Amino acid sequence: MRIFFVGASGHGKVCAEIAELTRYDTILFLDDNKELTGCGGHRVIGVEDDFRKFVDSTTDFFISIGNCKVRQRIQERIKSSGGNIATLVHPEAIVSRDVEIGAGTVIMAGAVINPGTSVGEGTIVNTSSSIDHDCIVGPYSHVAVGSHLCGGVFVGEGSWIGAGVSVNNNIKICSGCMIGAGAVVVKDIIEPGTYIGIPARKSS
Ligand SMILES: CC(=O)SCCNC(=O)CCNC(=O)[C@H](O)C(C)(C)COP(=O)(O)OP(=O)(O)OC[C@H]1O[C@@H](n2cnc3c(N)ncnc32)[C@H](O)[C@@H]1OP(=O)(O)O
Image 1 (cartoon, rainbow, N blue to C red):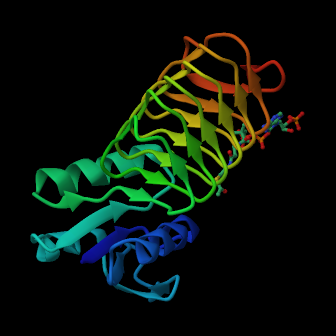
Image 2 (image 1 turned 120 degrees about the horizontal axis):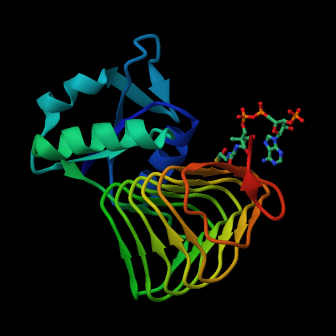
């Protein structure tokens, strides 16, 4: 099975390695930076727009771009052109059988997702993060490296939970938030913006 990654970045090479460890034997990249020729030992063979040439029943696509809005734009574009969007789960992630994962989402090594949780499409569940029971993680969000969501947490579309963040149980974080690295979220966040510190407060 063949997979094209859009985004030949550091994130791209980590995603490509997960593809290698799962069901893909041909891995290729597309990137609008024409100077890039390879990523993680795989060839960059065109720009984003070239995806159209490769849409067929034996090809998957995955958007390996960290920026949540850009990832969403490209994923929706490829999907609406008939491209099949892959979901990637590292073999050493621990994902309960009672978890829903949307298309275009990657679950990285060491991540743990407990029962009753749903993770929307186009989301990054990064290395060694954990999402406990009964959480809803909205589409095109990012649960960054080493961050932890306790049980019953809600994360809105496109929000970024920074590296090493902790979110207390049953907390809701609305769409469009950036939670800075190392923050501890102890109250619901109802207004989009950047929040930092312990306890997390809106940054001025
Ligand atoms: C595999 C991977 O790499 S996944 C990537 C994971 N990376 C992350 O999660 C990074 C998350 N990003 C952050 O934490 C960022 O620092 C942000 C978004 C909170 C702020 O970024 P910027 O807007 O560029 O802020 P900037 O760096 O200019 O700092 C502004 C002020 O906030 C402080 N600050 C920045 N980040 C934080 C933070 N996480 N916690 C506390 N204070 C912070 C700075 O010290 C600075 O304070 P000062 O004005 O007193 O000097």
